[in-house]
Amino acid sequence: MPYEWLPSDSGTDRLHLWPHRSLTQRGFVWFVGATAALIAVPLVGVLGSPVVWALLPFLVATIWAIWFALRKNGRDRDIVEDLTLSSARITLSRHGPRGRRQDWEANPYWLRLTLHPTGGPVANYLTLKAEAREVELGAFLSEDERIALHYELAQALRRLR
Image (cartoon, rainbow, N blue to C red; front, side):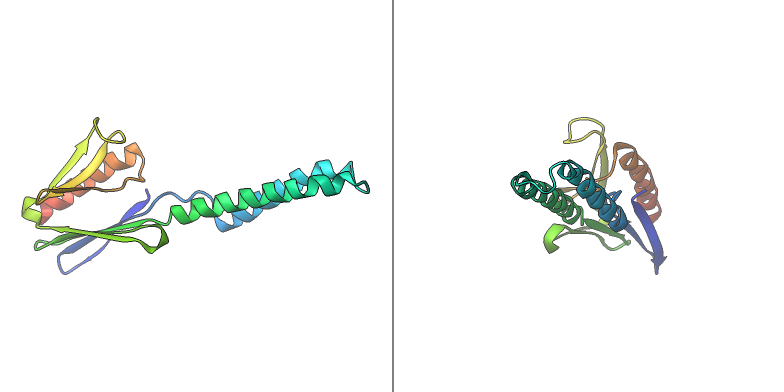
């Protein structure tokens, strides 16, 4: 699961969430290298002719576009959510792409955890609501992971109260 409960200290529980990252740095290098090699195969037949110079810019542009798209996707997936649960305060910090940070906090007494099976942007939409403000938790998780997180978080909130 792309979330973990961190060790609690002095009655405070912490939940750390992040999106899946299936392409490692090594996998990225292998993929771009293999793509470049496969794209270069048609050049072998035209080596030594002026056609190489006509095809080469397009092939280089294709490899660059693949590299750029994969890097941009990796940067956009740099999301981390930290949920801190204590008897006095509940805080959610979301560190988004390009260093953007969003914070939310609430009194645990008024907090309502809701799993919306339908009606949200995705199935099993998980939200926290308190003091007239509702925030989404784990937007990047799969449907089954949100269900499991709802169960674990509901238990943690019961223990807290």
